[in-house]
Image (cartoon, rainbow, N blue to C red):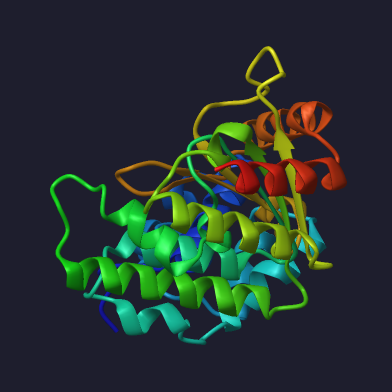
Amino acid sequence: MPPRRHPSFRQRRLGAELRKIREATTLSGPQLARILDIDVSQISQMESGRIGISRQRLRAITNACQCLNEPLIDALGNMTQDRTKGWWEEYRGLIPSTFLESAEHEDFAAGTIKIWTSLFLPGLLQTGDYAKGMFNRFIPQLTVHEIDLRAAFRTQRRNLFLRDPRKKLEIYLHESCLITRYGGTDVLRQQLGCLVDDSLRETISIRVIPFSVDTQPGPIESVIYSFGEVPELDTTEMESSRGPFFIDAPGELAAYRAIFGRIEKHALTEDESRDLISRTARNL
């Protein structure tokens, strides 16, 4: 079977973890290839997610690298068996692939996802009209068809995620998110009402950083931190106008956990945040 041209998020992450396991030893790619009796090109292809790997081959690699982290090995073994095709694939070729990667990242998360944003409300909590208002501001201007497709994708992404009882959201918003009128005043008022309703769900926590906090408690970017099946599979996603990029280096993950700890200390309580959101909607 030829190498994959476009490995998925999950396939790339499996390969990245294999590379980390190898690099934690003194083994080079050629040395590991000799131990496994395979072509050296297969090592780089496995570590880039361009070819598949069986659970048996995974165990051979971890044994050769003397990896004793059984919870991680089991979690990676589960990833080798995953052949499901994500719902987002129906949109491939219709919207940018970066949208699909964010959806797959959310699907990859094993439990809680933490989000910090200071520019706009998180995609998982956006109404269709709010999403259209955001996409309508893109430069160059999107067509009506492109806007409708992206908003439909975002709505489906939201609905499917919220139906999954295993997933929990911890949302931290800067107060400025509550007054930026994507789509206009009526759209924002409806969006804030939906935000209040979402805050009452058992699986969602929404907390606001008010203007009264004198310093920004974290980065100004939109940051998404997901908890994996094991700590080694945690992921940070940084959103930007050019699409997301993903961070899985242990040191950087620790830094972002610390950032979320700082944000949590400055945030209003859930009840205080709900009151602020409701009051902001009434005053629009």
